[in-house]
Length: 480
Image (cartoon, rainbow, N blue to C red; front, side, top):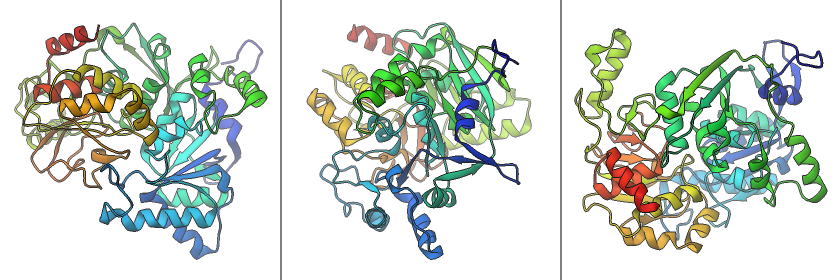
């Protein structure tokens, strides 16, 4: 559809993609320029090895940073040797970064942290840019109006060598949120409800723009949480148009433009939006007035319900494949059809991951647990998303609140979300976590994961079980 000027109306995704398009390739893919590249230890070692073997070097080292986050130990005072199984990959990342002239944020760096946490807080992710990383949840930076693209090891190598990426252009999708989130609800509840509505394949093949009054009302950190789980929708990436909140967040960030350059950048960022008459390939509408506190019950993020909900009965499902998948999830999670979720005992409570480990997440959880104590049978952990977040939280005394309540206060890293470090849920144990994935064995062999918001996880840690709505209301009243 044409806009007022007679030119074709474009989505924001089209505008950013077109601005980075180098050329259309013969195989149907597009070659695009990558503004920023972030490395983590598990997908970079082989890429550097292949480059050396081919006699190639890093094309633009100043546009890349590296951080240790996946395998790193979160034990306070840790080093590269604390988790022996990760030592080799961490040392390889350090040496590869040093030899290539790439900034390295290792365990000893004051800005070390999870890739998707430090990219925004350092100002590496900017509106209108394309940022790539060898991790699926790179879409997190979409909360700043940046196209975050998760890539594999071979693509990491290609970006290092050329600063470009060859991709099939996704279709455009917009999810519009109407109404207002109830008090006490969060972006995590919003995205879990959305995935429950349209499924883990609902966004497959799409770049998703989140829009509507409820999105505009979210803080930047909440927007980062929302965009983080675009991948759980099946989408290639997700993003939100920048606004005044975006500009305020980015001002004075280390790698953001400075002085007159920042003024010029703000003028450009302010114009980044989808044209009013732009047509999307798919559009979905969500009523926020219908959303309540969410918790997953199964082994995909679409297996989600209200905390007062029940486990579904697979015999009531017509599709044979879905019926069997639900049955398998119920067996793995050791649940029964029709079982109420609230009151379900938990063994571990984990607040962290690239989804919910920012300062606002920790502030909310700390406010809920202040003056209370973790249930005696529960192991509870808080893992800040970066060492910067940890310092900010400690300056506010949040670490004292968590420790007095019985939580472990850890150093920054992916921790229990990915469980390729020492933070693992024991076999058969039930964990409620602020993570983004809950498939079988995700947090350790035979572990069982329930995904929820920081508020629900904090309340569960105190109660020793998944809370019900009345518990959450009492907690909310305690905050007011």
